[in-house]
Length: 95
Image (cartoon, rainbow, N blue to C red; front, top):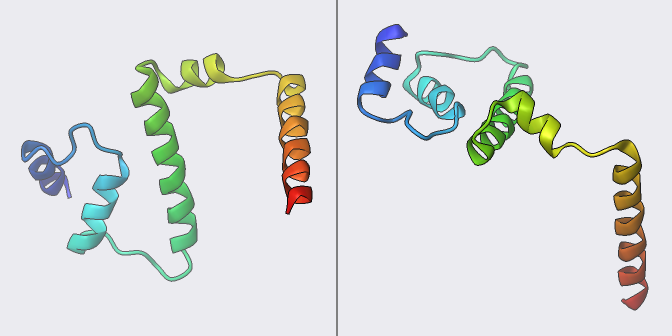
């Protein structure tokens, strides 16, 4: 597996890519296999990794700092939810 990683890295397959690219390559090549019943958890973990990678790559700062920088208070969050729900209910009445 270490050789496979080095090969992917040398060929540039991992530069500016989501970490799930490595997982996809390993699964497709047969280096890694999944037991039945684990695909859901792997899918959830991959989605989480994609979100964190996107956050890190778009902000250019460490993930923990980006999360704190982009976070809002619960009060602001609830106000936004209420606004969107009101907007949706008005749109539904039009149709």
